[in-house]
Image (cartoon, rainbow, N blue to C red):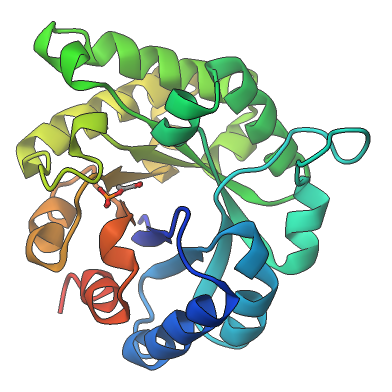
Length: 251
Ligand code: PEP
């Protein structure tokens, strides 16, 4: 079955020394967790130091974004080969903050997803509706465009090694979590879209994370839903103890 996947998105937080302290504190707290994939996504500047800190542990490394070209005249960008070189196994792509503040589109998400998969890394493809979308009955239409746009042209094998993160924008950093039932409803809808894009068998292998104010107190109820396979955690991942408690949602 699908191995649960809990990822901490640190966003624009933590200097190198703070990042090393956080991961040094996290390592022993989650050392015994074997049946869950644990990921941290520091800012670019801390990737190398965190990579050394987690070497040999059960914590894996993700980047928060990437550019779709491998090299060239693209000032300020970071490529997939560079992320692979520093030890990243995953890349978060299309986070709502990238879509909202930095002009990310379904097309650019799709290009980045293909670049990441082309180098053997795994994309965590973020999708999610705004509050107005939900209130005007547009949730499914928005999710469908994010999912189908993000995975366009992927082979079944590539799709099966991708992760989708459903993050309702109204729940990110607001303290308002989707209820487990609201999350399940959208996760089941996403799995249906994945089945329609390829097959029910491929769709059944893809992990779908929930993100949006996940905390130790609500993680187990969310994870108990049949189509919720993990969490993408912002604020609560900045503290080792609270992130470890989310990783141990079933203990
Ligand atoms: C996120 O940024 O992906 C996120 C879910 O943030 P938070 O947990 O703080 O709502």
